[in-house]
Length: 141
Image 1 (cartoon, one colour):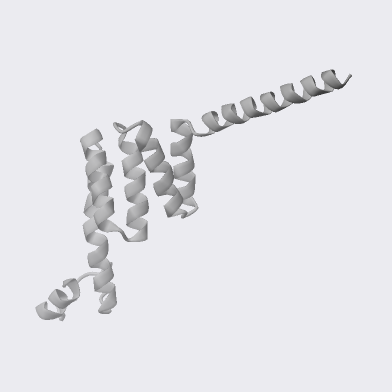
Image 2: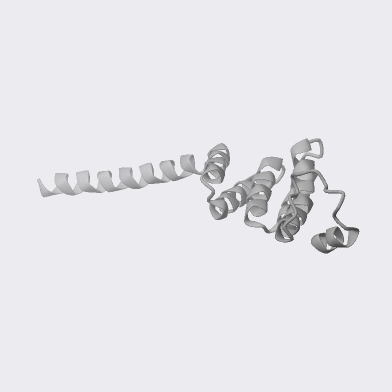
């Protein structure tokens, strides 16, 4: 009787380990990693987006989406140089993606918009003709 219980216990442990391995492999497949990165982006968990997109890129270096998602997270955090690097990798993977080019432009425009906001200029409004050229230059620099 003891042998039967021991054998059943061993089989149960081996089955649990096998199920854990299958679950882990299934959970971390490529498309699931990208889907999880998208969800993390919507939840504004940018460090998690970077982690998941880099994990996907390690297995799929030719897929532009991993680099693009990483860049979007880097932009949201304010790391524009790192975002440009990720966007360069995305452009190498698929040069025809317009999203990559627009995001690259965004990495240059966001810092400028932030500077404009610090000098009490409204970057979304029309340019006031009474503003001096020196005031605008000071805002950009």
